[in-house]
Length: 232
Image: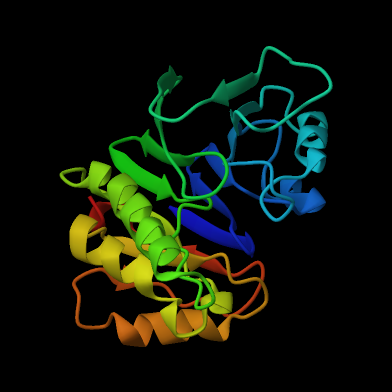
């Protein structure tokens, strides 16, 4: 299995000839797949750092591409390969099982099973602890986040993409720590940090006492080769 960091919250997972694309806004993402691949594109919500209409140009590279879109995303024309999802829905497409969960902002989060491997992409599901918010707002954000994450308890999550947003200052780690403590994924991959790659080293060091492996990301386009047998 290969995992590629595109940018921010955008990632690719390649498993043989199957390609999963999550929240990529880079127009040239299709350079990572070809017409022979089975390509599935997941977009959690409509915010511009997670969604761009350029994703629909990728059909030129792969006419069989399938899209799974948070239901707040608007398109000019609905096509047969556009699958819109509200939270708490399940779809089975080819060899994928796709479950949607909620968010603490817009849209949804995804749990995708492929060949026995569970991949969770949080989208904007995050513990948004802003220092300038009121105590009541902070407590609500905490409750809402924990409510969604706790729905994953008991699932064997092999790979989890979870926000570590540096704009939250010293509270950047709250989502990742809670996720590791409650869900215990095999691998956690930090996201939602823009160009602030330093934050991935910080979260790796902060959570080094847990069993979950934290991947450190240093650049756009960075690739990780994962032995699938070691994460199942």
